[in-house]
Length: 213
DNA sequence: CACCAGGGTGGTT
DNA sequence: AACCACCATGGT
Image (cartoon, rainbow, N blue to C red; front, side, top):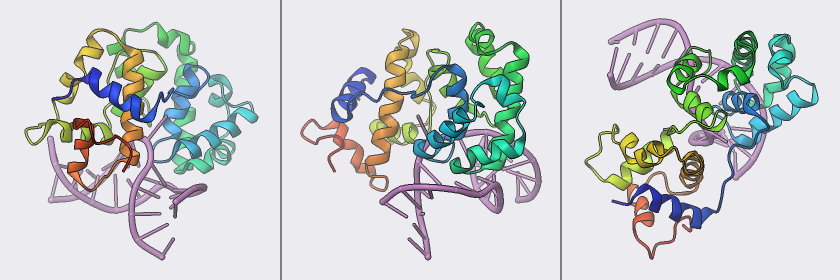
């Protein structure tokens, strides 16, 4: 089966460099990670722009903002009532800890547990924050990656093998590759056929161009 | 107009 | 542990 490095190369050749995460600083990555849940980056980015315009894009300002005000800022990202409450709770935790710089000094395993303890941060979001906000070598597993790797592996796929597949990148601490690969997997998943399992062969076969369906 | 988008949570079986 | 309803706006 295709190696991780080969997969990364082919996806990059097909779609180009993705350059995730489009954010300014670790805290903005955290905010964006929550806002983008179950919506497009387009809608999440609009909400971030409004937060920035109103001076609420720092953990101290966000932590002391009124819920109603936050709701009006993040409305375009959907689920705005829950996201407003969760974002402020997260901001308060970060503030009470001494800021994102303090979190950046924590070991990865403990930091992951700490993130999972916060409202609105599940496994996928926690790993995305670890990778893109704190530059930790972790693989972000999502619906796209599970589907793609299941197709690449064929039938004998338990789902637990996903971590072993990307293990070479994690072990070598290649955060550059991990960031780009996850972004490319998502990009490919959005364009590539979702209903036909055979579609994944476009990556396995050289004469079938990736992304040109 | 139905469907989906860079999920998480709480409740039920 | 697997399944479910719910959260809600914006684009196609």
